[in-house]
Image (cartoon, rainbow, N blue to C red; front, side):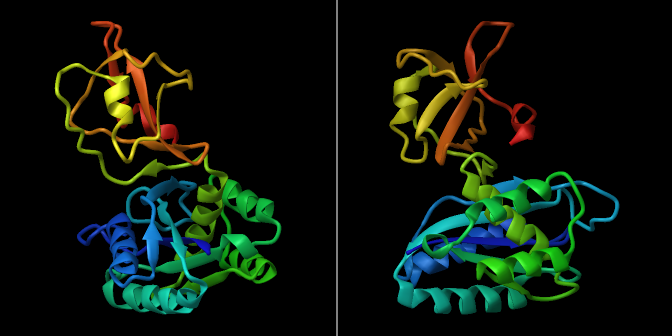
Length: 244
């Protein structure tokens, strides 16, 4: 069984971030032998004065392959984890979707895309979750995090939204390295220039300290840009990736 698990609004300015908690849930699933998990992706939502958020209003999601018998234990574990580990003053929400049983996935995707552009309500979220038989639960505070949790699940489902949390350590034999060497990394599925064009395998690439990938066509993709100063291909900066 394939599931998507998303959390939102678990932190404050002094606490561990939502992404870190999401990674801990994923790691626990694997440690308990309940399944295998993908990398965590960050999904940017609407910034508006009517939406309370800690810093950037983003939710965190991962996909897991599990046995169906482990679905309820995973939901129970994640629920308890959020109630005990979320920061004071946060409004945590949890969303878990059985992808294989999901009816009308386009409705979930539409909710996610809407949440990037307008203010939505808990009533909107619960209504859709009930219609699509999606687990959606709040675990403290106002519980407003359910909105972002449901939206983040829909955005991850598109396969074309979000940045993978953290950065990749790339062991390289030379600097610059090559596209071919980068493709050998287990967490990099494709290497492309910023606008989507593939580059020859022997293309020289000069890496910065933080190598981040984005979710494109359900793959972990390393995007490059050509620096006009020295004409070298380099991994995109955080500024380049703001749209993901």
